[in-house]
Image (tube, rainbow, N blue to C red; front, side, top):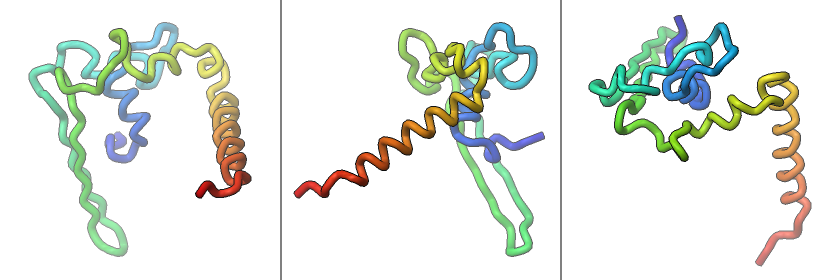
Length: 119
């Protein structure tokens, strides 16, 4: 089992707040997240406490994930990640799509760096 605190914020949002994606048979997209419907609405939030025993000492981590009425805002009734989950390019080849998006960001950063500083 992997703690929610070991996932990226994006993976956590998908796991908790995203509805089941049609055609997916495994992973967190194969089932509704606990805060998609009213199943966990009385919880309000979920707190996760994680302890790691490291060679340099003990690390404590705690996070609160909002649920029910306090879940992240959605637009048009869909979670913000829905567009990505329904994008055929992301579904067909997520590694290639992620690489393409990363290259766009790198190109934008390089273009900004090449611009003379504004006064």
